[in-house]
Length: 266
Length: 315
Ligand SMILES: Nc1ncnc2c1ncn2[C@@H]1O[C@H](COP(=O)(O)OP(=O)(O)O)[C@@H](O)[C@H]1O
Ligand SMILES: [Mg+2]
Image (cartoon, rainbow over all chains, first blue to last red; front, side, top):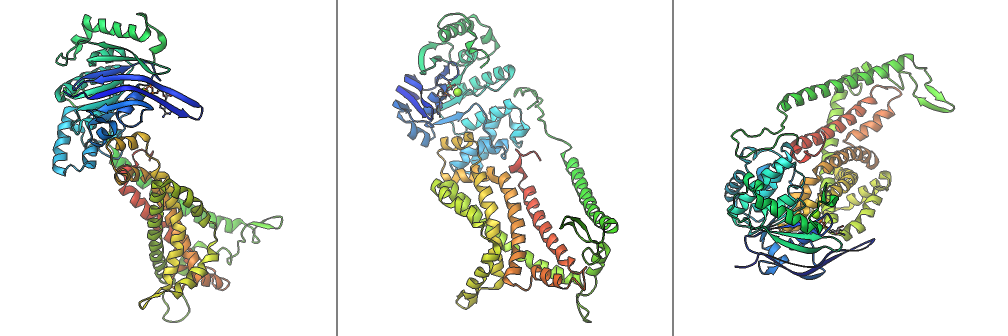
């Protein structure tokens, strides 16, 4: 099996007017095919930058990024990944259906095929009844679901998600997490998932990658041991194994098993 | 974004906050706008007559300067006289057409020329905007000239355009004089379109352009799918300004190139007759106002057709 992402010795330095920002220093990480990996860490530790390197939206200052054995650029051109950002980023003048269809349209998928694929995706994210609505008529959670459907439109083998649920309230967030777990289990896509919520990372992931800032680096990687075929439901959230991993990640984040206020409220 | 969140497994779908009574509300709004417009018209007429009735004959002077006009029938004919004059023959000759007819015909001619000028100016403006958006250097190189172009007074180059035009003859086709007028109108109309469209094309959020980049979309696709739709809210005011400029440009260019069939010439020649027939001079002014209204109405119609692209706007 081929790895979805292979990051080796990557550093990223931004040159700004006020000087250099060392966003990432010597980061290496491999994401296996179909694996769900979360990146967690305080704000500014380079999570988004790391994901954007994989997406070929930034170029590394040093090191290499491979996606399915190709350069990140080739993978982007070949449409090997789907992406969802913190903001849904829907085009306000397009309906839900037309937003989901956007990547298909750009890649010349025929009208008939487009329509059936969009119907399928809308069904998958539970928005069939809202296909003709415009984004301003949807709640934040619904908009984010459209963005996820759009990211899945071309059946990517890799999903890149940058705090996709960051703007949602807790209840919606948990529901969306379960949905995402179901969808990725169905599609078998590998996922790189940026978050700053510990329970979210543990709940969804095969592995949680803990990062620290200035310069951004990986400080530990925690395997959750929650299999892909384990149902992501309330029972899991209540289980001792889940709590144990949450505690482990928290300890790794703070260097000691105490709650620090540093990560709260971000 | 106030609704409760959807549970896709729930049999009752969430109702999105769609304004159900939207249709009735727009009709009420339209009716109110029409009534207000009418009231405004009545108000202007009332002010006119009111000032004419109570204002001093010599007007109001501050020092040497007259800040309000004389109230004589010569300077300010009664509203009803102006209206009545419209239905009388243009000249005292027996078979003369009614004044309104002559003004209407001339206005239609001017409207046609202004439309050509607006279309040409809009096309040129859009092309320049696309070019400037695509090529940074073009923006640096072109934008100052575009701004500078508008500082050349119309009176200065209108005769130049006419004399160039009169020298053009291609395979028996002669440059018609109305085309000079249209060219000058387009010269005024392209400016707001170029500037507004450029701003609009540059307006998309980074998240949208980056999304298209992740799709490895071509610049043309990005233009079609994101930049042009995002530019619509900027484009509509620009088109409205362009339409107003085209109308003004047409009337002024008609005068300064000596074009005979438009409302511009009527403005000048009737103003010359104002001492003997003061109400007549106002007829082409109404014609010109009508032109402006038609132009604004047309752009408003365009705006209504493109309302899906204006969802971000507070309408
Ligand atoms: N385009 C950029 N130019 C300059 N600095 C940047 C840029 N993008 C990110 N950074 C900096 O890099 C660091 C990491 O940012 P980011 O990856 O967004 O962190 P995170 O997503 O973990 O909050 C921050 O200090 C941020 O200010
Ligand atoms: Mg971030």
